[in-house]
Image (cartoon, rainbow, N blue to C red):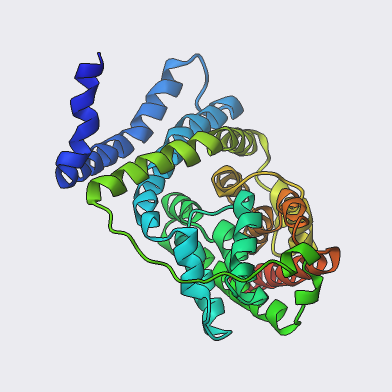
Length: 348
């Protein structure tokens, strides 16, 4: 058996361009089959398609493979891209830059780097040791989980390029502004003492060349690492979305998440903070909320708070930040998210 598998495993290294082309064609072919396959599956069950259960099942059977397929494709591509952006290289790019410019660069790098809240502490320590300003570090730490490739790809696949581009601009604006404000407050004294006292290290980084085949291996490793971790959250998120889609009345969400309810945006942020999920898990819920009449600004505020202000990330950051700095971070980011929600409820 191993002798049969070995040639396939070696194929990407020997003919990487041919492999990528055929893999892309197979991915697009599978994507086109999702809707008819979901409809056929529901039709084969003893369920009325127009019933609440039928609508929920159609949502679940279609969105589950769609989200997993989108996620696998984008994680594979970004796994290849991320081979250029190791933590060492990211630190080297940010260290020594002027504030403001560095905030923009840090937020932009957060989009293409594969770091999440679980990486917050080692990344934070590395940035401080490399001399990256505190505000710049926060711009990166906000952008990396909130405006990541997974969120943008799933938003594009479910809502189109306008919503994905809108979320990109909003997320970058929040990350850049929040990091700049925290930098202006000069709160380095509110780092934990052991972090402040760590010796500085050089930010120099010598890039090493990698072949295309090695970058393809990096893509497969990223799929195993990321998709292998987040698929349970995806299933839970889609199941909740399916229940909302099938059973929640059309005007129910509009009654407390619509444009006319002034407290809908802060309520969405408050609900989102204690939730423990990620972009892949929350986007199916976002899709169902919008379909049931929730306002776009309110839903975006909910999504941003889930990803950028989650309670688990605050607990992790407590290892390196004193409570006053954590509270400042939460207040500044929450204010930006609230502003986003109110502005887009007003203009859309």
